[in-house]
Structure formats: C-alpha cells, structure tokens
Image (cartoon, rainbow, N blue to C red; front, side, top):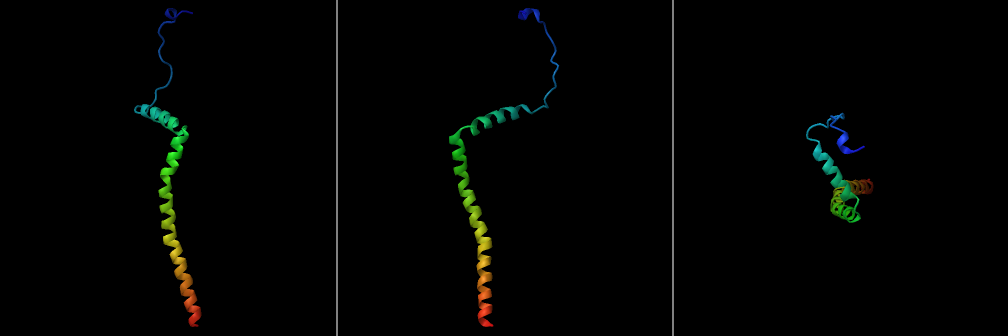
Length: 80
C-alpha cells in the first residue's frame, strides 16, 4: 500500500507523564557508559579510597576498644 493512501490517524497510545523525557536520555547514556570495561575499572578504582577509610574508621572504633578491654582484664587478674 502506498504511503499517500494511508491518511491521517490519531495517536491511540497513552501519554507519558510530563517531565519524564530526561529519564530516557539519562538511562540510555548510563547504559552506554556501564557497558564499557574501562569505565567500570575507573569507577571501581575511584571507590577504593572510600573503602580504605571505612575500614580504618571501623578499626579505630572497635579494635582499640578490644585492646583496652583485654589490657584492663590482664591488669585485674595480675592484681588479684
């Protein structure tokens, strides 16, 4: 059937909510970026300092308390 014979038909689908067009563009861009291995490697490498700090803060908060508790127990047992 030739194009000139089809005529005009109104759109029968639903409308997307207003302001949601940017989400489609963002999703496509992020999907493209995340499919590249170099970007994923750079992303993991950039998070490395954060994880090191988290471990340092955890050790500072918990390991020193364990050492103090063990030291105080050894003093108590030596004195008694």
